Image 1 (cartoon, rainbow, N blue to C red):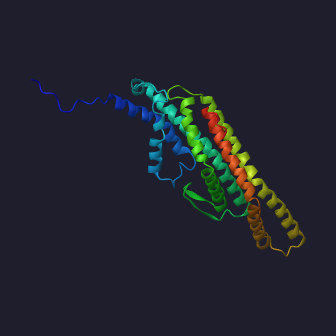
Image 2 (cartoon, rainbow, N blue to C red):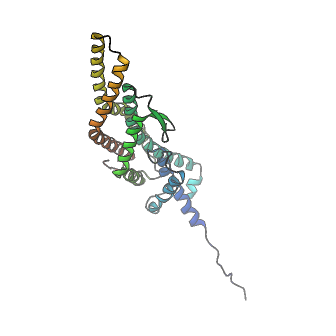
Image 3 (tube, one colour):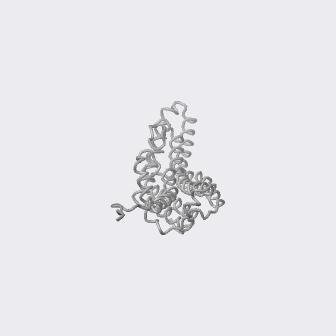
Length: 268
């Protein structure tokens, strides 16, 4: 009598297909984690980003239409992989540009008020940046996390799999136009955040100029410089509540931008 094997053979083909499909789902989330603010910062460990990129797409298994493994393994799979990377990187970059508006405003205020020398190493940027710019960036990140906007951003990326399934193609013009519009809006938003302090400093410099012109015994450096710094700090203190509201609006604009770009319909 023929002996039956104690352990039947395992069919690894379904497991291989599941692993390939999960790898495709990870690309968009992983590339977003690399480019997006807070998620792509240097202070967030790489292991955390890897774990999040692996775990988040798990609920999408079986819900998102994916091309067969044979098509992914063919030459057309290169286009699919590049498309997923482009979508994630574009969404993260657009959101990063809105965050850069706050850093740009802080840098402009510091240079205008003569506080540009007050700089220290910024671990998220990897370079020396003014303290005022770091304050604006830290406040924006704090609001981003405390209002659960980071979860909303991840939800937008996950919902984009329903709007733009992998391998189905996407509107490249929408990505480019959103990126260009965001780049142009960066300077406008930075100017809005800088305008209150810049207006005060302009009036203060005019007053100091008139005073030193009428009384030359006043030294503009010993008199005007401490006055400018004091007025800047007081103005930042007075406008702090309004600044928080403006930064929250900046976050909402960023979420609405990536939502419109990915076609998820979130309002931000």
